[in-house]
Image (cartoon, rainbow over all chains, first blue to last red; front, side, top):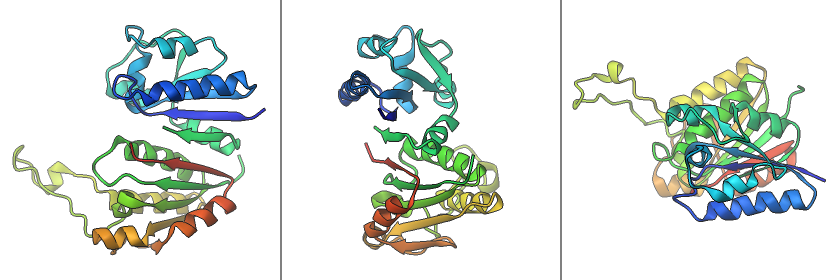
Length: 106
Length: 136
């Protein structure tokens, strides 16, 4: 079993590739790995409770830890998060790198 | 946490992508924690350390250079190197040689150097972990 940090920077409403990245997260968990999905930049738009983002909502409670960058949220005036998505600082990336987790950026 | 060495690849050019804002936030944390950073500036990112970048005024808003306080990536690179050194870390900032030649940005800020993708391969082999930040 490996540990992964998947960093998503894109808004699912601007790129269909985001869905494939969510699928990668699901697949890694189904294969027995531990996965953290960190939403940064425009990717945090999908974490609004009002967002029509069913693929992200499907990841909640799937075993994937979903985090949203506090700076990106503040920049965009987003104050409420989808249940199951936690606020996190950018330090979380370095924490994972220090721990030797496989870290991917999309 | 003991000192680590990270290999980082950047590809975005200055002043265009939020990727670099996030990248510098991550690099800042690494430098604050005293880690070593081996960074390969590839393609557009080869211009980040270009020494002739110049802050400018904003005549539309009636601001002079000091009031505008326009950030340059060359100053951000210099600040990163200083922060890492202060905390006991080292930064090996390599600018892709062919990329800088193509763009005419071969004059770098101090303590950065010219190199090639082979340097990134060496960085990956010598580092505890790797983060590649591609263009969109």
